[in-house]
Length: 113
Length: 114
Image (cartoon, rainbow over all chains, first blue to last red; front, side):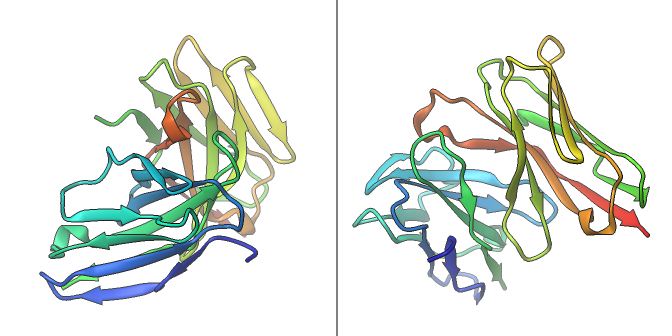
């Protein structure tokens, strides 16, 4: 596709529910990042993939957060037993190679009620 | 620990005026400093970036000034237009780190009045 595509755009989850957020990176992009952006804040790094390998997951806030990219293209961020503090916009970004410009998707706005 | 501090949080400028946003960083390993523009409901988009071996970079109406000794950098938007109304984020990166993750500032909401 023309850009990074994320789905769903909006997700409302009841506290305790599991959610899965999808990211379709730009075709051929090796690097893929997930960021969390709280309301009125800058994005914060969650995790990084190079192809299918998750090379950095230092930003994942708890073991309820899990990300995968099994075939080196589409990635899924899963949040188990959602809490209100998980409410945020989750941004996915991809770049063609390590160190090149990262292109961001429009994000998924997660609201936990 | 907030590694990149951005100010002001918001600013209002008249059309044709200059918008100035400042950022300060702590990690001396940072070696790439981009600025992103974000419109409501959209993801951040790269606007302009600088490396610490230069003190200034200009692209159209956008200029980055960089002061390595002070660990500060700023974005100047000249001849501000209503279409520039957006949130701007400074960021920093360590090029040799795995993946080159970005560390963002808190953002500045810019409103350009016609």
